[in-house]
Image (cartoon, rainbow, N blue to C red; front, side):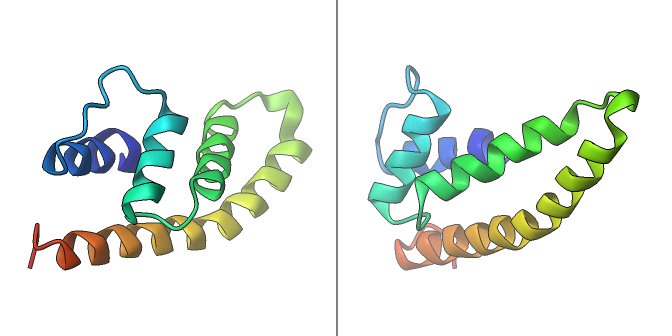
Length: 95
């Protein structure tokens, strides 16, 4: 949701065309604009989410390890959302 909705909205407000950009390029743009602190860390969190969303019963132990990582990354994602909110407030896009 952050990548597809918030990044797209920020790009629109900043008059940046992201129609042909990859998710990585969008994250790099958001880092350059100051909306997030690290495109690399954001990409890692997104990849972890993608890996966790596919469930294969024969991989339960690996799934438990991923769940533990998800808990760690959840803090990062929440902090990123707070950074984006602060960015939008600083820019006067929200109050």
